[in-house]
Amino acid sequence: MKFKAKLSSIGICGNIIKVLFIGFNVVFLLIGLGIIAGGIYLIVTNNSFAFITQSAVSAAAIIIAAGVVTTVLAIFGIIAALAQWRFILILYSVIIVIIILLEIAAGIYGFIEWRNIINGQVRNRFEIALNMFGQGKSDVDASVNFFQTRFSCCGIDNASDWMKNTSDRMKNTFIDDASDLMKNTSDRMKNTSDWMNNTFYSNISYQLPNSCCKANTPICMLNNSFTEGCLNATIDFISTNIYAIGAVGIAVGIVELIGAVLAMILCVCIHRAIKLE
Image 1 (cartoon, helix red, strand yellow):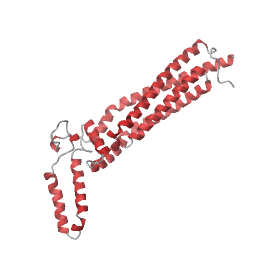
Image 2: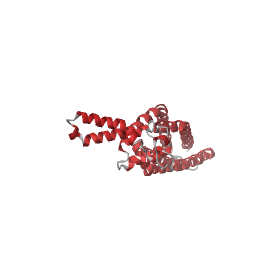
Image 3: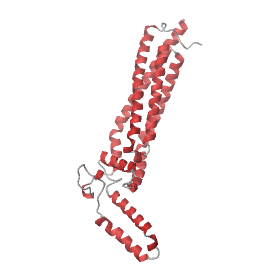
Image 4: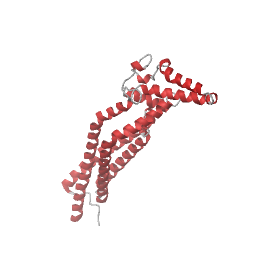
């Protein structure tokens, strides 16, 4: 069985389709290279938010892999069209259709579940980050400051998360360091607990990280901090942009579908040419 037609035998219509298909794949190739560049950029800049998102590097790896697949497909499509190789064009179309189906499944799942995913992951990672903030962990500090500055937010639900978190940290540290002294002294433990509960907020009331306030704020305090928590701010940001993200995904799917259709039409032209040989 022949899978390749003579270069001059597919006719005017076939040659027009071939030119369109090659042009499409040149654009597809540029898109693939752009996706790879975007993934590399995400890896290079991920220190700004990776600790809280946690999956930034994994997402970047997936993006780069998608870019590589897109680039390789485009190259094979161009070669198959130039050589008029029907088998590769059929394989090209099948892979494109599989990719479209996977994108549809991922898009539906993401559209339904994104709020639960963000709510669970951002809350959990932010709680850990608040505990570790200011302890020499540059990735933690960078992530928290990035989110609070980018979304004009403070804490998880509001700025009081910082005070609660720091109070708990100081209690735990105090009790650990003084455990031997307080082991047999219940009154001292009670007094210390009362001091921590009643005096902490008034005596340390309370300087927040600078990223909790607008730029150039001399001292960031509860009364001049951002009022919205970062969890809601992140959800609001995605809610505002989710339809634009969906529109881009649909546009990409349509472009991929056009590529698959052009490949199949070119296959038909090649098949007819082979029959006439």
